[in-house]
View: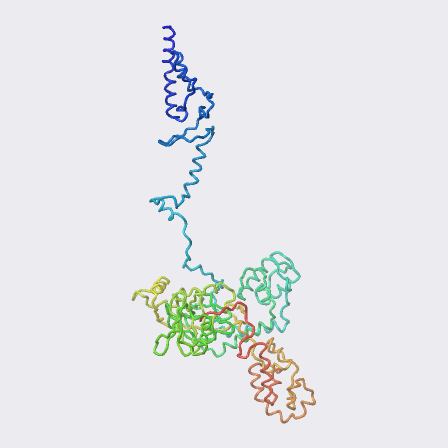
Amino acid sequence: MAHAAREVFSELVTNTADDRHVLSTRSAMPNVFNAPRGPRRARLLGGTGAALALLLATPLRAEPSPAPEPQPDSRINLRIEPKAEGVPEPKRELRADPKPEPRREKAEAKSDPKPDPKLERPTADTVAVPTETPLAKKASRELPPVVYARVSEDPVPTYTAQTFVETMRAAERYQVYAEAGGWKMLPADFAPKPGDSHPAIPSLRHHLTLTGDLPADAPPSDRYDPPLVSAVKAFQARHGLPDAGIVGRLTLNALNVPADVRQRQLRASAQRLMGSNFGFGERYVTVNIPSATVEAVENGSVTRRYVAVVGSPDKQTPAVETRITDVNLNPTWTVPVSVIKNEIIPTMRKNPGYLSKNRIRILGPGGVEVDPTTIDWNTQKAVNYTLRQDSGLDNSLGQIRIDMPNRHAIYMHDTPSKSLFAGSVRFHSHGCVRVGQVKEFAAWLLQGTEGPNGPGSAWGPIEIETAIAAGERRDVKLVKPTPVAFVYLTGYATSDGRVHFRDDIYGLDTPPAPAAATPPAPDVTTTGAITPRAPMPRPPASSAAPRSQPSTAQGMSAKPAAAKPDPAKPAARDVSAMPTPAASSPATVRPAPQKPQARKALPPARNQDGEPVLLPPGLVGGRG
């Protein structure tokens, strides 16, 4: 018996480390080891020392309880779940879960970024959360970048003291082309790519050789080869088209203009320059209206060419020769009477808040401001007041006005509608000229003028921007006025021998024909040909001749003596205007009703006010 007790004791000592492990496991898993034991384990506790050793090893075994009443499962579960103090254990079935904790952590991680604001108490962390969320985008007041149409960088000026003579010589040369038959029309589907061959290539080569774009010694070819591509680029540059060498619709239209029409453009442009006494100096400004460009010329070369927006066909920019005297920063705009009648009054009838929205004030006698609600906008009484728009970024004149006294009261200025500078057709204004990059242009005009910081300072882009940012109107007088000329040249020649053409947007190249009712006269007037038709030396005999213009010899010989004294003076006037015998026949008619008949031919080309009937698309109008 004593020997058996010593063996049990040695076994107990040997298993001490295991027992410690079991005790630590019990403390870590109270829900498992605190489970009630069955009656069988109670009987084992009253046995011998061997039963005691068996008792210590019992927790390592999972034995089902035979008790009939429902008891918690005593099987070991590897799920470690700490139990809160004072909270009774829920009666539930314990199941082995291979990955319980990662699932719980995933659920917690999902719920952390979006806490429920109704249940969560505000803390320093929760208050800072709204600042991290992206706020709604506010409308930016920063202006979008301005896109300008590409203009030529040719340093040769459009208008010089020799332009008239050079243009007349070009007109004579194109007259020879027209008399020789000109050039052939290209087909509507003509759009060759470099290297392509086309039956119309020889006609294109002949055309460009006549106009000097293709050298006369260029090797002949029926393909659209590199020399021909270069010639097309030169042709496009002379016509104000993108010089990419691609024959597109605009290039094809320009190529198909007959030679006699080009000769008429040159002759008409030269005639408009007759009588000009413009004072060219070392520095001057040229605005060619059909080109819609502004040139700053210095020492015979164009220092910079600016994109411009000129008058629309119904509000044409007139030809002007004057001098630039001032540059106005942050100008105000006095609304013209025509704009008040045609735009302001109809708009105020529909939208009474239009003036206040656009910051336009109504000024009465003595400059006293008048309330717009006191004016009856159903009448024309508003024209008796002065309407003036305050200066600012949205002012119709923009931020800069270039003052140039003239009888037409037109000027150059900035504009808030800068998107119009990107178009190839820029005929949208009310007659004034809007200049792209006008601040740079103003800095060029103010060269030599004392700057805002006193003697020794100058007006540069930074100084101009600073003065505009001050928000106050400031008038800067040029130390030396700069000559400026607004010209209308649809065809002109430059000093380098090249001939340039632009579209006749105002229709000024076709003068009113005094004999438009006669069949031969439109030919002469339209094409500009000077080759006379069959001469008619004898005047018509009776007043019935105008009604049947192709009169017979009998009708002409009826009263030759009575008609001789009268045609002398009208014939002299017609010859000076257009030296063609064909145009003299209607002027020899004595009765006065012939003149109204000549005027009746005008409406197809111009309306009752003498303005073109056909307007280009996209004329949205604007201020100035």
